[in-house]
Length: 512
Ligand code: AHR
Image 1: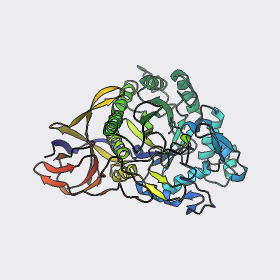
Image 2: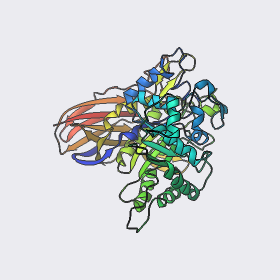
Image 3: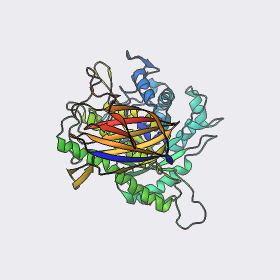
Image 4: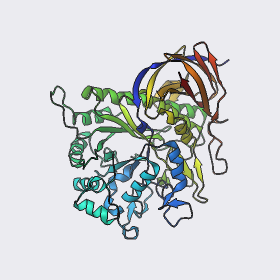
């Protein structure tokens, strides 16, 4: 008999809005993400429109991806945007020193990226160069992208075939300035964020949401230093907002940085270690949010996790600088518990970008180098099952009657891992409940104690597989794929849901 947990959900008590931008994505000039992933060029045999792969676009449109961050990552701080405009054959080449030391021919540049965003129906999140760029270069990029009328950058854009300005809501001021973005101290970067933020102008009706580059993991000193740069404790006047968002990065891996473990070969103990690290993201979100609350109780500055996901040792035989890894059921469960944590902290966390969309790290899509075949990963399916949470109203979930735990050995010491995660939201006369059972062996059962509104119907879906390391390949594309779940029955308190070992379940409720 599976243990039972009670999940109390007040369907009529609205929480904050779960921004759809929490389901954002990231595409860097890294390995085969842009080249071979999104971009194959107009002469490719792979069906494309103006060089952009149509099967990738179609798969991502089904996820309703809300935004796409580009061109990095570390690459952003050595990218000079003027190298990526004009006739492709004339564009200067460079070496991508961060990622694989390979030639970058700049064939995918500003126009190609904006074209891709239009095809995806996604908002562009352009990341500017602080580490090796200039204020002028960044300021001119914003002008090139967003200004109308007559100006030197508008004339240049028009000469390159684009008359109308684009809409660019999100603009990043550098990336990881504490590391690959310039090895700066927080105090130095805080001044630069103010300076660069000043010259990233709003042109016409394009209002930029400027995102300052934030901390690694739980470096709260970084967050505090940046928050001080846009706040003034005890001041009566509102301080100037040089940036509207502040990011941080959080990756999940096992062991130490130098040896993060295999994507597909792992023991049960290593699986639990992964899950402990994944669930720890919630402590880190809360930590940054608490610092921000001190300086910005009105929550004017948004917290943004613009890089997250699993980071394993690269697939054997591939370029170590390309960060290509397989994606198993374990990765899907990592995604599921992250997204739950995002829903729970949607009052401060307003955007997140999984790294990275195609062929790099925790990808949604893998493309086969030889055949060109496209594979949807287990992580893709979690995002697909969760589209009902986009822009929905978060509902609080209280877990009662004991939540199962596992004792896990981690590099941080012994930890108790709660193996059940539940989140919920409501939108358009329905509610969506997400339930993850992280236990590798044991099934669990959850009574949904539904209060405040009548439920007139339900439909459940499940993502699981026989083994934790199961994954999809070109020849077995649906080894891990969602299907209808018949483990839901009515109960005096609402519904009872069976959540098998290592599975992700969503229950959609129709509300009266
Ligand atoms: O996503 C891969 C890299 O991870 C990014 O370029 C960098 O920002 C981070 O360290």
